Amino acid sequence: MAADTEARPIAQMRGITIEFPGVKALDGVDLTLRGGEVHTLMGENGAGKSTLIKALTGVYPIDAGTIVVEGTPRTFRGTSDAQAAGISTVYQEVNLCTNLSVGENVMLGHEVRGPFGIDWKSTHREAERHLEGLGVRIDTRSLLAAHSIAVQQLVAISRAMVTDSRVLVLDEPTSSLDRGEVDQLFGVIRGLRDRGVAILFVTHFLDQVYEISDRLTVLRNGALVGEYPVAELPRAELIAKMIGRELDEFAAISRSADREIDRGGDPVIRATGIGRRGVLEPADVEVYDGEVVGIAGLLGSGRTELVRLLYGADRADAGRVEVRGRPARITNPRHAIDRRIAFSSEDRRAEGIVGDLTVAENIVLGIQAKRGALRKLRKAEQDAIVEEYIQALGVRPANPNALIRNLSGGNQQKVLLARWLATAPQLIILDEPTRGIDVGAKADIQRKVAELSEQGLGVVFISSELEEVVRIAQRIVVMRDRRKIGELTSHDTDVDDLVAFIAEEHDTQESPESVA
Image (cartoon, rainbow, N blue to C red; front, side):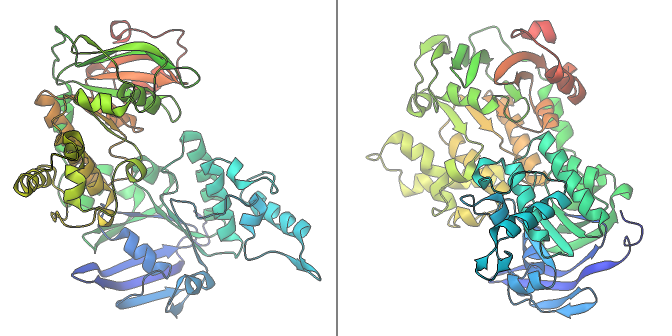
């Protein structure tokens, strides 16, 4: 934090109230952003974070309250007004033109002009200067599409800072980045903070909150809970303030993971030497009734590739699969569904929800597909199934006729889980089911997975949060560089053990007994 700017407010929001038909999204919320600070906005999905950001950036008009920037009251009638006041935003989904060069993206709308139009040489020189000001050195004439999401995030930040913005809003900028890319981004954020920029940071990763933030504001149900220096607010207290209750569910989930699993008979599924050339080296995996098998590894380690081969979403060219001890040919999802194997993809928007359908229609989609087009669900049967799972999973709002695209990420994930549970699977594969959702919804889903496993359902669970894998799984398959490097049992493994195991050198797959 820059000593000369740490206490100086750049932007202040006071008594911000926004109402939509039938709901008060924000109710008298305050927010103060100070120069030279990283200020994190915290709250569950539906707490009002996105609405507050959109009020600050001119997307939504406010119904009551005031916005003051650099001591001057402001009325934002659109995003251009906010940008003119020195407020820029970089969203989770990078809003860039990937068909243009890096330099064109950085300078878009601010190109250097000469007597005959745009001076491209000078424009690229300026782009290079702005990027180097953030510590980023890349060829500005290279196509943006050729670069990683992490680099595109940095290009988006550079574009936002071309106008010397005083406030930079970063909305979930790390959701698709690996650890090294996060470190690079955080280096840029610290540099901007040291230059006196006020940074508003939004994330669901608690570790990152405590790593990068100076101060945080907590919202709950559209209202302000409070503003706190990060150093003075322990994690447990932060979680309690976000959800309005002490969170003891995680402890219960950990106790569930300590259960002994009966591995005396045939597993639900056993894959031996399953792999795909150039995608995944041959690996062995088995899951027993009532067992949660976690798949752990860094981004790009082969976690998703492995489960897609198990489900038949991608076709294996090596290995064999047995279901309940009998050979099974699973070369497409239809084969998996016929054997009561369900799969929830990590990309819930592209491969999960159907945004234009209702909650009810999304829930019954799986069971109707299993029955076929000619065996329609009766209305009474459909209503009973939908009501059961909305209540069981705590979907909010509990309105079966709501369009699913209007639900929060956590509630969309609950609907996807409901869809597959309605098909009565014997094995369910969950790929990143808690990514990008708040801690309360995360606890709900983890608790439901624990309950299902206690009832005898086999579960394969992938998460990029290693703590989550250790908490929920009885056994952990560890991946690195698109191969299985071994297995660990969770009851005698903590996150440090798992990280150390991932970092070690391993020549071959190791059995659970050799590393437990």
